[in-house]
Amino acid sequence: MSTPTGSPNAAALTRDASRHRARDDSPPGAPAAAKQDAAALISRFQAVRNTTTGLCRHLEAEDYVGQSMPDASPAKWHLAHTSWFFEEFILQRAIGGYRFYDERFRYLFNSYYNMVGPMHARPQRGLLTRPTVREVLNYRAHVDERMSRLLARADRHAHLAALALGLNHEQQHQELLLTDIKHLFSCNPLLPACMPDKARTRLGAPPLAYRALEGGLADIGHPDGGFCFDNELPRHRTWIEPFQLANRPVTNAEFAEFVRCDGYRKPALWLSDGWVAVQSGQWQRPLYWSESLDHEFTLAGLRDIDPEAPVCHVSYYEADAFARWAQARLPSEQEWECAAATLSPAGAAAGNFLEAGNLHPVPAGTQSVSGPASAVAGQDDSHPPTLVQMLGDVWEWTRSPYVPYPGFRPLEGALGEYNGKFMVNQLVLRGGSCATPASHIRTTYRNFFPPAARWQFSGLRLARDG
Image (cartoon, rainbow, N blue to C red; front, side):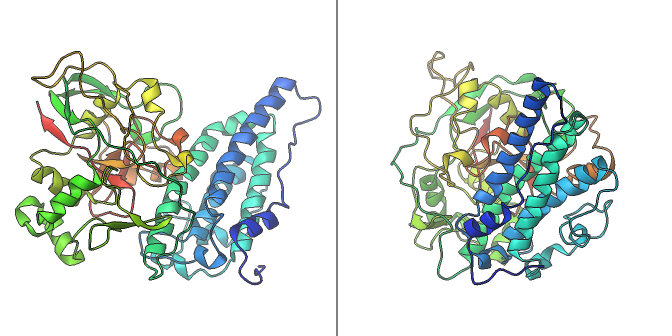
């Protein structure tokens, strides 16, 4: 395996790997429409793959290897694992006599697919100084070339379902790549930035208000058409009691007041397991906040906390305790999806996602997207509070356990391990974040994490009964 000389940055390493460019191998005489179809597939595939490596453009070679905790993975591992996925689940099944780039990679970069075979222990991924970053990028280029050749074949349509899953899988890892790098850099006393700070315009957040929704019999889950993960199926009906949902996520200023009111020192506010987590972890404020509550660590380094922006990097336990302190609660995932169904198409597309380049939550500002709903008692029915930031900025904790929908059936074979086997001891989050690709999110999307997880861009929105 080759070894990079000196400390080349990601741009130089990527230029080296780009020598293995993909090519269009459409068969001679193929219809023009078929060639265009192939070109569109290849373009989409390359766009997702290039986005992943583009997120690493400010990293140095040393940054790719570190692992700050067992729940996080090195950047290099993310780059390799997402290539492993295409090689394992598409290329070897589509190409007769396929030869893997390196048989050892099948062990090193398997994540949790026990039906595929054994894997390197997750907490020890940071010990993999070899293969080098350059070799991993060459591996990516090799997979890209073979995938592009496959997508140019006449039988490419047989592999589109697996391709869609692979691309969405990689988009998940784009967000994980950023959150894992952020946690790694936060452990460095130098508090380095992994990307330049983006110029920010100070915006406000609308006053906190509650919007009443009538509830009733609601259709939950992904409808027919378009990609979704198996855990979003089947679409089914469920009864939802009337409820109220906050018009926006909880802000930094509001959560800072909870901290100043000794919220982390009042056991009555906390679930039993949450109080244990507070004590054992010595939690006193959200992850990445300074002791003074004035600064927070971001992907652009240390910056002033914006009081109007949604609070992020809080666990389910912290979100639940805050809600109790605020004399409210967290919404169920069914309530959240019911409310999200009232958003207009423009509202669903207006969020702060990965493409915006902020890579941090921003205040709602003048966002104004809503749909029909009854108003909170005492308000003008013609002007219910506008729901903002339902998509993007922060993943919103719900109070719902991550369990299968009625009639759920996982995918067959090893891909059935993707979601179903994690349906225990996890809580559902909804809405995407500032690190989620816009094309990856939808209102039926079910993210899930253990209740103590804090390193994701997770925040909260309040709810109340009736």
